[in-house]
Length: 482
Image 1 (tube, rainbow, N blue to C red):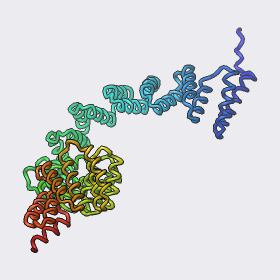
Image 2: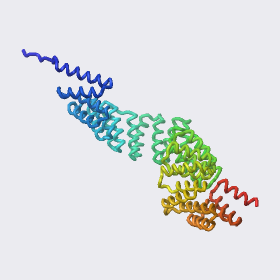
Image 3: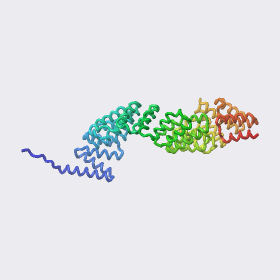
């Protein structure tokens, strides 16, 4: 009869365990340096364990010591590669350092250890998507389906990945599996229409919209979708009426709304049609209510108001846009045009200076800043800013024309008619006589020369080109009264 093995721990082993527990208590009470010293001493005098290295790794991580965190983590994994907690720490640590490849490898290893654990698949898919490895993301979801079973969410996620990867037909085909399983669930038809719309395949969405209406004849979004598909068959008033519920719905992505509105906004900008402008104002008012924190909603509203001559209201919308995002220079530019139109020199000076800080290579900002200096009779500063604008704008006739117009304004204020005339004529030549401000200034120079007949012609030309300033209106009114 053989002897039984003595399973009792030695006094030394018990002492080591007590020291390990003491180290953990030190860590829990915020005494990390003491805990690290105690664990390091245990590592030197005993056979190190994965648990000891893991505790050291966590403590060094809290101390933001990457090298020691990494070395202790590596030692823990060498001793216990299948330790779930150590693996999870490795994944989080790798993601924190941007080492997504390491995190992916560890997640794949965890999936082999825990094939029924959903979260491992989800994290791995997220990393593959960030790395644009769409095929591997799909493979992971298929593996998840094989190991855990089919699910609606998994199918939808596969469709989204296919759509993101540009495989729209495969995405729709995947979603059709849901329609086959749940033919009376309109939300799955809606998912398909959403993917088709986002990929400019609006016409293909019609059968799905009609199916939604078969299931629910009162579905407003489906009715609206069909109305938009057939918008060419009704009047423009019907079209704008049909847009109201779409624009007012905060759940409809703003990009879809902007895309629908943009052709009409462009038409309004080119035509100046005030009726169209008023219709767009009604829609844009609903748009900013539905999307108060979206820069795009306020920017397009600002454009409509500006094109309709409502400069004060446009300024408010452009300011709101920039409070949300300062990245779009076009918004800065439109705000500066509006501030110039209402003669708000002080604010224009501030906005132009800010625009220069954010976009130092945009000549138009230097031009606007120069305009504010001209208004203050700071001609030296104005000329310096215009010279900077000239260097940046080389080869851009539109901005060069504006710059020469500003120089002409300086010379006009200095009562140097010859230089003023030369600069404004150059500005008109550069713009093919399409610079409204240059036409107005040419009229001002002719007025100083007592040539009111020709001054009136240039002022009227400026008005025809879209100049709507109060000063120009006063000049035209004075001509009518004489």
